[in-house]
Length: 202
Length: 202
Image (cartoon, rainbow over all chains, first blue to last red; front, side, top):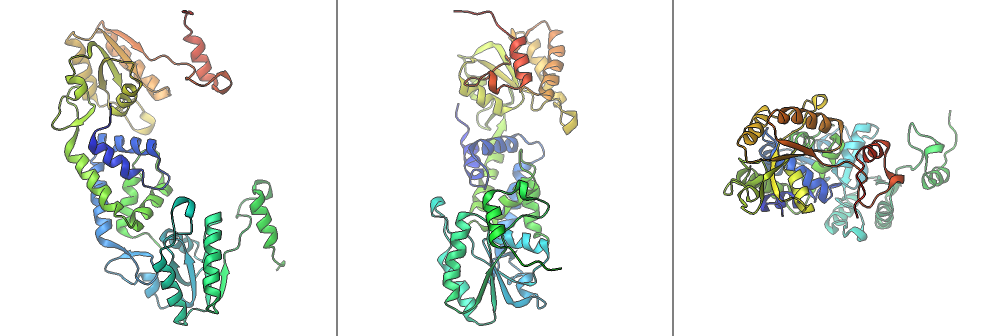
């Protein structure tokens, strides 16, 4: 017995979400189809609302309301405009802002170099980043990507592009995460923590 | 920085899906919001289509098109109408049909007894099941639920209700799954496999 066509359509779309395989998508679709509280309608409405009101900030790529472009971060006069933190996507901005230790601006690449998964950085974003640096206001570019092979390739690529412009390029420190210890760290994390060791400051 | 209101609405609804926690829902919502191929619109359309065309079969509760009620299984004259397989939800029907070893009809309870999670069997479904048995066509009711505490409670409850009607009640065998072995089986599975041991047939 094949699933009904409308179910198959929902399953195929749910399976495009990150971390959702075919089986999870099926399970979700069945829950949606049998929900007695109108989940299908509620979710459809929320998605339509999202699509019609939320855009990527024309300056940094962060999510923002159509009525607030540039976004509140880019428009905030108190932020340090000499620092530009380059991230993979808007969710990274959310996380870094939650940490609360950065007061500069952001720039989303909207992807990372990942030829194995058929993903790439949109070329227009690279051009936009380099144009932004050429404007001359930015003194330091902080590359803030994940700690995996694709992110390393992305960081390396962006570093090559940026160093030709004479701007200072830094990246996030890699090391032992807070609340964890040597016993729990994998060899790569330990090697990076050792490589990036810092002078002891009291 | 709080998420934008339209993002929060999508996140809250995605978090109602099975197996989706707050963090997964956020990750999905960000992917949806930044997708360049219209995922938000596509998914919203598919959900709206699902909601307007798919219903639960008025006879068995299986998912079916509004234009095909009762569903194709209930309407199939070749199926054995003396057997009724009682399941938790339509997805169980899909799974059992894929196994292809059952030729009777189905009945969905649309839930199981799960007071800890605030879930219950809709009382109307229990009444509908008992009414169906009273019609006299069904000789054997097969209780086909999962192997967990809530399912055991549900099976036990339904058995009590059904035995008063004089119908034969069976349930799925519990034991070692195909392709697995004793080394991988947990103690409860082993105890159940031992308890349900069968005479050796050649």
